[in-house]
Amino acid sequence: MSVNLIFKIAAVGILVSVLSQVLKHSGREEQAFLTSLAGLLLVLFWIVPYIYDLFESIKGLFSL
Image 1 (cartoon, rainbow, N blue to C red):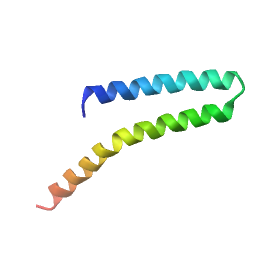
Image 2: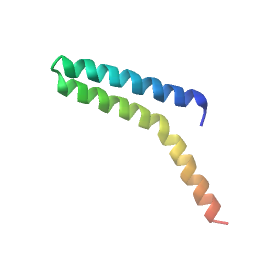
Image 3: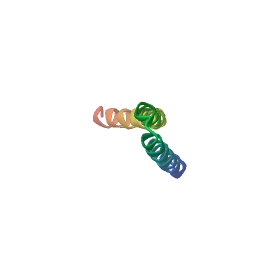
């Protein structure tokens, strides 16, 4: 996992939290929820290949 990915995840987290707070204070709770959900899905799409590689490594380790 590269450091750039960690920085991208942190940037998305900060951006989503700020947008969520702004939307909640303006009375748009549904859009705040959708913004949080979109941020979560974006980060999951970035993380899924690394999780797949982890499971493949574990599978290769135990199939000696």
